[in-house]
Length: 288
Length: 328
Image (cartoon, rainbow over all chains, first blue to last red; front, side, top):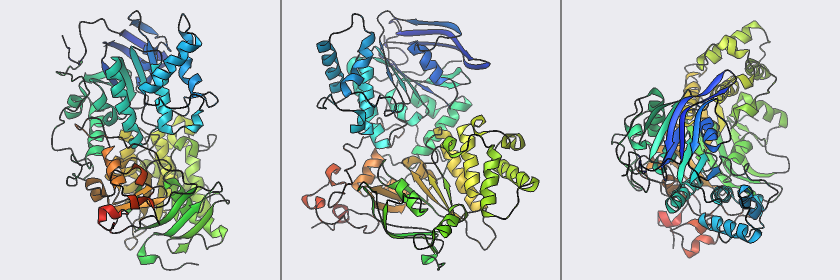
């Protein structure tokens, strides 16, 4: 049965977080977060800087151990990680082949050279960089190509869960649009689940089935992106939705249409029609 | 040295060319005017030359860069005046807000001291309690909570959004005629970004020195079209060192005409529109710039003649003979 968020509710979750709390000294970064990520489910974690969304991602990745609570990964779960700054996240002295092959070092048994090269070539063709010379260095690539290399690195282990931290916020919108489309295509093709952190609600909304609004280390709202943005309940969601509407309000709905309403803070008159990801979710679900 | 400003504009840029030492033709004939009280947003992809434009207006380019053309700032010819006069322009006639507030502040100086210093550099007001009180008042105006306590803190104790407001305070402290804001919100959350830029604009409009004085103008450099549309009166779209479209912000975003502007608008995320349309291809190398229209290699409307001859001039606000019907 397809569940509330476009994923199979009866399937065992890829990752299950129960009552996860993280403290940094006196600061409570996460305050009792419970979350199931189902196979093929795409979830965005949104909120202001410092709300705890990146901490939540680092707990799921296994990079950070929670102060309290449990994190269960389904056996065989492989994670891939995509970071914000494509240029900073790639070692400038490594070739394209070394960069993309690096995550394979932890695989047991470790694949041999031929298998590594085949995996690198498969990952690069998935991000449409198949024709690129494997001996190239990051500075010889454009920023958009660097982010696709970073995505190939995340895909080379054939992940069942892709973790992305602000994957488009360092990019020009024209380049970001390409990365979002590529992510959508890759997730559709591989069936991997996605957990993406972003403060840019407009950018990630069409990519995900479900959006979790984080404030003060807690999930304050949980639902379909179009529902949350059309009918936000929590103050944080209202502010995020208001910004999204303001930043989009002057954009025309049709390429050659008339100028949209231009006044600051003016809401979009029409509702928030479902655009959404390839796997259409159904029915909203709010946490209480 | 001081001449009447062209047509009353605060900033007039005429046929500005900038070539860096490595041969990169970063600006290739820019013509722009900014009127008092007006906010002009310059938009375009990374590498299009928009930051070079901001740097050139303030005469802050490296000495090795070759500059041709003119910049007139409130009646002063920026490139004809002596270097000392150009220094006075910065901070007094034009203020600058940069992208990363954290790196714009000296980490071992208190936040309030930065604002005091900016004020003292261009006024004869001596440092003292009066100037400190004035600074605290300014931070209060910018809605910094507990300004007395906060002004004594160091930059690392402030959030990025608060620090950017302090940077705005420091840049506008001498009531400049023009404020240059180069990606002022790139390091901020989206919701904060709109508030910061709207706050900046409001401040420029409310701080006019008297009833007879026009409000200050703003040149906003950004790659965020949505933000530009929110705060700008006019938009100039730059591509490969040239302005390819200019006009009222609502018209440029609502009815984009140049194929490049259309592609930028299509790449804007919009509610309910699904995933935005990417713009394929990349900026051409500018060492030297290609002949004809630099966008022609990525353009869906390109004709054979587009990639030859001099770059197309702006006609009726758009530099595309195919769109304006001037193509043979």
